[in-house]
Length: 336
Image (tube, rainbow, N blue to C red; front, side):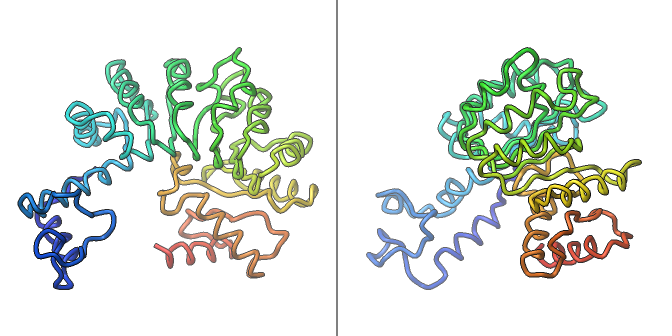
């Protein structure tokens, strides 16, 4: 959400017209503007204010990704976002914001009630959001407000504690229809999160009821019976990822359990990997685990990683000795 500087705007303007042609309305030649920068009819005829035009066209892109947090380091960016809410028509947010991080709790500080209410009001205007991740304290009771807001968005990627979003005794499975476009889901719930989510018994019926789910990430290693249910009933599922933070005290037992599960069920969709940040469900996280798994799958298809190997290793460990992890680290570096 960093503003475009005047010099940057002039450079873009110069690039848009660097082939010597002039826009229609300033001499009759065909426009040399990119399609997304085309001026509205009559705009140039009114004064050729190209600098203003570029800023107007670029401004929505500045708010593609919004990060909400009680962290004071993000305060200026959030205030800029809230200023836009007050100064622009509702349609601006609807066409601008596509990815949101809602960090209502950062591990040490909780968002104030005032901030949460301002965010709720803003989210109701962000009807074009496609990807969202949310982390909050159990004490905040966010689900009753957030669920109807989320269900009005065309979400295709989501990272969330489902128990927070649809708290007990809500029947999760009956709410799957609210997410008709969801393809990537990261479930943060674990056995220690809530007694109602123990072994994810409430979560699984919701997951298998999602009509377009292709990628599912879980942070709990499930038993073979439950895993088979997911694989058999999620008809479009391409990847079932078990994810853990590393370093972690039980990292290798966790990974070994995934490898055993994959081999015993004979299903290559089962994979194990690590995450470095909690918001990696978003598509623009450069070395997020979904991107890592995409590269991992491609390497297996090329025969560069054994087809029965289910683990990426700890791709965030710079001193790793795992050959697969080192191979993936090099490929990630080449693509960034």
